[in-house]
Length: 124
Image 1 (cartoon, rainbow, N blue to C red):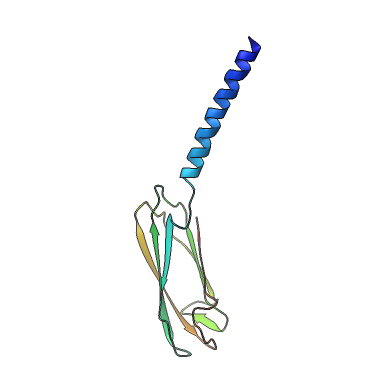
Image 2 (image 1 turned 90 degrees about the vertical axis):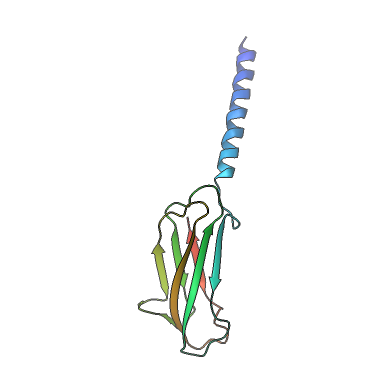
């Protein structure tokens, strides 16, 4: 009798564990789920104002809750209207299929390749 109960509980535990693993895996994010695209000029002159466009799209099945966009320019660069080289912007939830765009203006000094040193992070 006790072996039957033990086997029953092991089977129930395995089924609940498999369902939990499937649920966790289906709600996790990957690079394909949340698409991040950065658009800007290829060539610039030193001191020229540059506008970068950051596009986000949620290709997943669940919303991205409380996301935070971190945008940082390279050394010897300045962001328009900012005392530091980094902007941390809290954004609203991004629902499945939703697209958003954010614009950042900066001036670059002393770099040959303006795309080197940029840091863009999206925390969810």
